[in-house]
Image 1 (cartoon, one colour):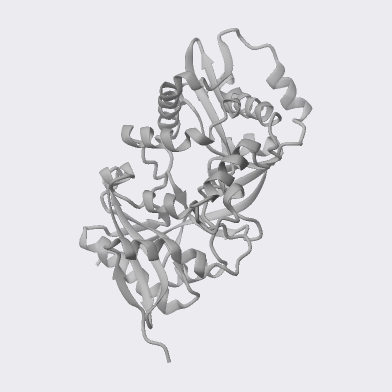
Image 2 (cartoon, rainbow, N blue to C red):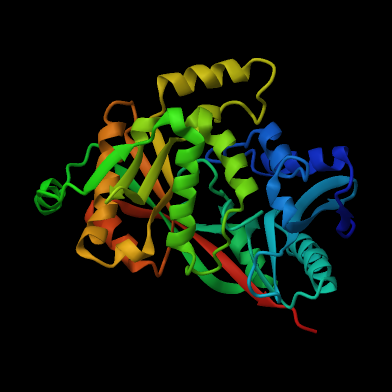
Length: 376
């Protein structure tokens, strides 16, 4: 006979360590689960190192039963969310037990209710600009970098707590060996005005280029569902974090009349490189990682892409996503990259889905964002 789940708010470094390590133990039997780097996860959850904490309040919770960690969840309030009634949950991982899930969600919802929140969205770990959604389809392949991976039972347990679908987001897989269709090729190769150019990222102006990319992203996505803009501090943090992964040939920037109007970034799939690390980078795995990244990965991910809204409405704007993907495709041909994930894409972002599907990419994973009213 086991006892009921006890909730422990994470407050100490030792408790944070337990929180970060828990999924690797829970999902050790899942051959597709990739343990994240422990160092990276701890930095992401550190108010001193992650600028998200400048505009968000976060509380982590552990579920403990009979002295054993059996689950975890986060609750967060982000001041940049436009609707002050909305709070978020995230980082949900637990044993397949309804009572454990109930205890975890009760703790998260109680914390959010104390802060005046009456509607919960999630999972976000810790923001919609980071890991988003709960995997509900596509369990038979490992996740790409910065994408969640959950067991099939997780969705059932979350829904038992009164959560319903708010939005689905999709991950598309693109085979780099696939030839563009004749129609798409003709459109891409069609004579374009000299004022429209496609170029790669200039590493000598890296910070400036990243500012440009982020400005396009914030403009392109600002009216999308639940969008939260990147702050200047987050831009600087992201630029530093991604720099070791950036291959300028895999970054495309479209300029029109000398002004940047569209972009796309393809990154090597870090998860492929660290899959056998068990979450540990020290003492010697960092050397393996550098060597593997230098050699190149067989898989990659497009995590960021956008077209300025003022430019997207015209014919040239409609061409921009194709030009971006074509440029990144040419860059990837110089590497071992064979398959690229384009993610995540809102289910109702039909224009982008049309572009991706026209290129032959296939939706192979679905992630669900849930919502629940917790009004008293």
